Length: 353
Image 1 (spheres, one colour):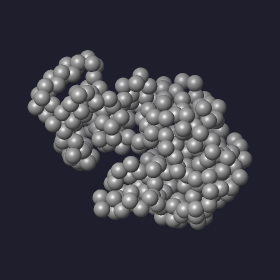
Image 2 (cartoon, helix red, strand yellow; image 1 turned 120 degrees about the vertical axis):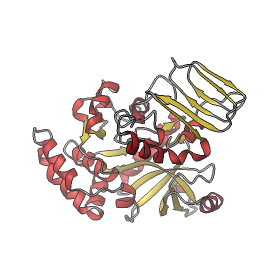
Image 3 (cartoon, helix red, strand yellow; image 1 turned 45 degrees about the horizontal axis):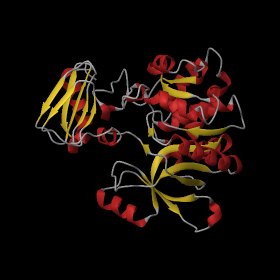
Image 4 (tube, helix red, strand yellow; image 1 turned 180 degrees about the vertical axis):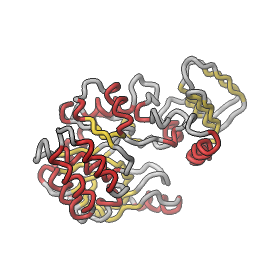
């Protein structure tokens, strides 16, 4: 899944060049390139599909040149994750009716790749033998209010291999509730990574999101023809804007979660990016070749390598420069960045968005 805008990473992430196409950690590889390389250890490249907004198809081709162009699915409209998954499932059904599927966002960070591969292989073994919808859950390390939580049923059986039936989903709780979740030991962070076989997800879509299922099922006979894009556009025009979590996972009775620990972050905010960049002696996280800091601490600084930045006297700030836009914002107030983006659009138009 590679169609998001990533507005919380503005001004680095723009409408025309969102965060999945950025080397946001300064590693030499963009997030989508890292995701593609990671998943090549699970299945051959010809079995990887990328679903993205149609305006980003060219970026995907540019950044993943070894991908078959037919495996890059362009969405004409942003309608959240359920239509994205329904489109991919219908496409896969036209290629392999016995497929076992991993659904992964393109803009997450995973620091322990081998553990990730081990977890995915174990999950695929489970879904190959069971008609269940499986999601990966991360053991929470703090009472984070920015993540969704999954409550699982622990039946205490040792042979269940850390795969549990899901009891409830909770989306972004308040701090008090997040603390309770952490203390109870019955909750995992929702990583937004799903594993299932084709028949199971198709059945679930047909039952819980009948309109979406029907639209993409009706389009399927035209896949691989010159009429595919027209029928996909019609499907997107008429389908509901809904996430797979609300549309299917929270309604289905056959949902399971597997606990995993592979250094995961959804990289949703500059705060989470700060955690993944090496800190200096004053706890500053800096990306940029020419940054000079004086009496500054606990700051997140990300600037182009050709820009000289001199900072003095800042504590706990985000300082980001990208494509002619400079953002200076308190780390504790970073949730306001989306509002800043809206205000910029209202007052300055789309030029800076």
